[in-house]
Image (cartoon, rainbow, N blue to C red; front, side):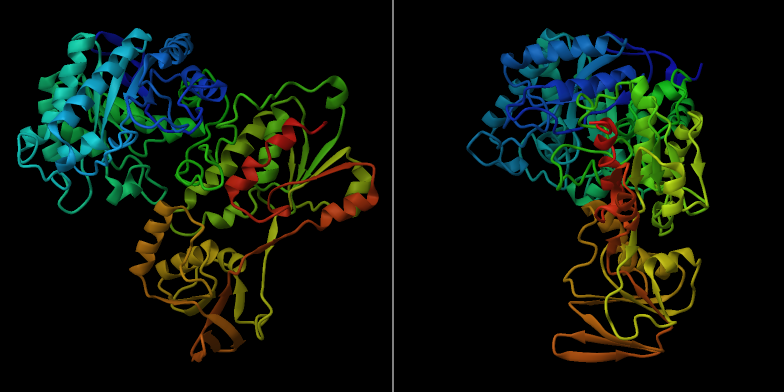
Length: 626
């Protein structure tokens, strides 16, 4: 058996395998910090999925919120008792991450940096962590994980970058580790030496003047002497936040070598984390001795059955985390965490995919378009026992996702198509390629239900010359293959325009990006935007913001900025990336024929992201016959 799937002991607790679901604040709880059915079902599915250990965040003090459950008072113990019972049904262990909620939360006095903490503050905090750990033990929770990473209150003390104290809590490595060491000792004092304590630390802070991995190794030694049973090696601080929940711009397993360094400093188990999304990679990490256990966070948001699928217990294809950060980090549209690969996340207890009746199964369902909206809709119908017929006018599935995967660091997008097509194929669902759904086909096949998932087309503004031979849409440019050594003007500094610019610049073109907006790619989540703009600023790109194009002629583009008009010469190519418009003519055709229920999904309704298209294709499948 691969070592990843052998048991390991933390303190007196034996864990069945070495795969961990680490702590994540998912915003599924009630406003007062109590758990609810949504949160419990989220946890249950991950326990059932095969991981050996689930680490769930709990607030030991501070303001209560839906972000994570609270455990700051005895009144919350029953919540955690019930959760422990759920997790234990599957032979899985449950730890609580003692998650700081800035020390000032709910305390009146604002505390920002280590030097602002009085010794009385620290004494109160140490006691708060220890009391919370004792509540965990009373609730039947198997152990705790102390969050000492990412510039939370404990992390501040261990970092020379933040810690400006001159007393026994500042200066040397031993002094900066004193506060967390005291917390560990206090927990052991209240809960017993055998009660497991994991300590999570940023191996490297990835900021100038921040802590190195070797210094973290020295701190880990101090924490081991204090009684820590394992070191959980994370990465980054707010100033390097793009690596904390690393995007598709960062290579898989990028932080594993930091865990391997920490392992040289301690004799207790070391846990690796950071963009480990494939169980095969997790197997290699443990087999190579770089870590003793592996945390797979967003990978198990995307697919809670990850471990079971690897072991062959579940035969379905894996839905791989692609690192888009759209649902898990950018929660502007929905406060609850969501996932592009797993649209059930956050509503698992609501989506009832009960089997259809025989009468319903006799209905003929046709799906026009095999983009991600159509594929997701089809998958959810199949889960209820129905086999729809899918028609796609192109020769391949995926629609616009195939183009979205072309710009730099975007190839993971293809996983959205791969997993869904594999699932449908395993259930015998046909996709009819090179077949456009027309009025004639509808009249011939006479479906009872038609889902229109025909996507969208690029919007081309009414600019003189925009129909010229030297003008392409963003779609046409990406479909056409590599362009090199050209002087290219892009109209549009939104997501598509910037990704096309990133792609063109990478291939050696001189790029100018024109847009009326004040800032580029503002709809892209912060971390992905940061990585992309950093790359683009290293290329030969001219930004012409708060500007418009008034005319395009062969070789020349006229740009207007305020009252100033400027002619750009020697232009080889103009790319229009000015937004999209739904393409749903088929809906009108079908409604004109009559005799069928028509559902429009994805970009055919309104332009949006792949996450929007997938997320909004679930409920129509759950209520298709309502």
